[in-house]
Length: 81
Image (cartoon, rainbow, N blue to C red):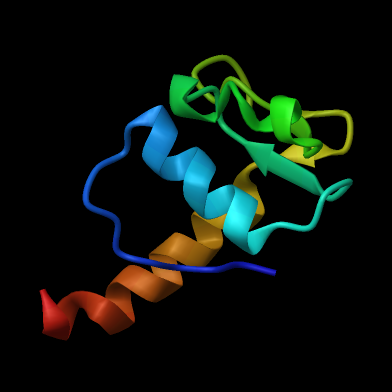
């Protein structure tokens, strides 16, 4: 499941607050290595990450699915700027 929301900034506190509201404790989130995601495990959220500067997959952790989603979404949202 993907949730999209416009956020005021990408600071750790902002993203963590949204994650806590949207994600059930014990859920598994896959992200890149963006440091604003570092506190997810503190809130009972399982967190797997991948450094896509080095590779696109690590076992069953991969980022191609979300990259495909953003390609699709950007194309449709472009008319709204």
